[in-house]
Amino acid sequence: MKTALPSRPPPVVLAAPSGTGKTTIARALVDGFEDFVFSVSVTTRAPRAGERDGVDYEFVTAGEFQRMVAAEELVEWAEVHGNLYGTPRRGIEAARETGRHPVLDIDVQGARQVRERLPDAILVFVFPPSGNALGARLAKRGTEDDAEVRRRLRAAHREMEESAGFDYIIVNEELSAAVARVREVVLSEGHRTERVRDLEAEVARVRAEIDRLLAAGTPRNAAAG
Ligand code: ADP
Ligand code: 5GP
Image (cartoon, protein in one colour):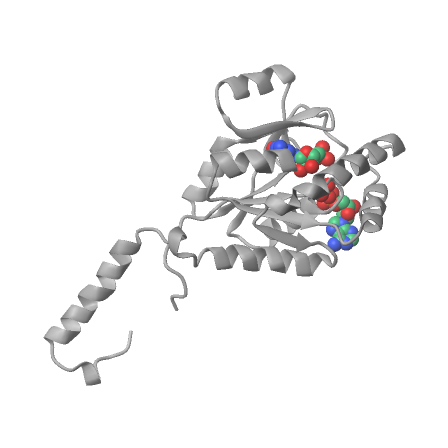
């Protein structure tokens, strides 16, 4: 059953203050649905326990990062909490060529750059249900010391204001509901007229069939297709 015309899968940007849950949502989308692929960022940050090179991030030296910037290999990049992070262009293109949505888990500065460089991207701001929940999630994750948690909360205070510039706001209260909402948004976007690939050809195809029906006489007994 055909429910959508062909469209080029847009990248999905999930941005949010640190601790809101964007990585958790991105991973759930990618693990749960084969039309989503995680965009693996490059970073100069040291790997955390359990992180795998090439899966969670590509861990690179500052020199290699600068080389990638100079060679325009990154769609966007930013300094976040003292480290450099960037989105390689090749991963985005590879995903789209295989008909899948690249999922970018990036900060709000990066999202702003994506808006300019990949204008067809869907920008989703993942909204914390409350300041208290955000503080509790950062503390519970336990990957930063107290001073760093406070720094991230101060950054969050600033970043919340940027939510107004996004296409969609999705509250991450209950995880599975938030994942379902992101997926719905992405699927709905695929039906937007301007996203349909080669609409003229699709119109011509249906019109040619109508012409054939008309030429054959009254289509009262034609088989439905
Ligand atoms: P971010 O990528 O935005 O920094 P994470 O995905 O690392 O955030 O999530 C921060 C913490 O919050 C993690 O410990 C994660 O397990 C937890 N978390 C994520 N989503 C939810 C949710 N809906 N309810 C409760 N805890 C959550
Ligand atoms: P962490 O070091 O905790 O994994 O990530 C810190 C912040 O950097 C998070 O907000 C994360 O989304 C962001 N980040 C990760 N990859 C990228 C990227 O490629 N570009 C940008 N701009 N931010 C990123």
